[in-house]
Image (cartoon, one colour):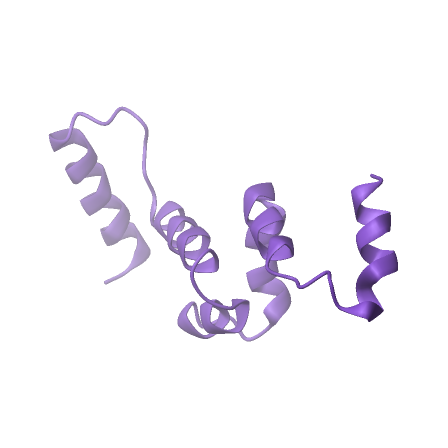
Length: 92
């Protein structure tokens, strides 16, 4: 199915659901990426979205500060090599 056909179907669904905001195929990809990034590694999202470069997938982190915060919270800052980094981050 082409993007224009998907966009038309989304417009029809939104109208039936009384959703005023226009929804496009790109919005659904963005939602997918944001949800997946909270559940799996960025490499898995990259593969599922068929991005050839990881930097393309990383754009979704830049657009969502909460995802970036969640990703950073998964780092074990108690490792001896990371003590200075942890201190630097906590001071900002």
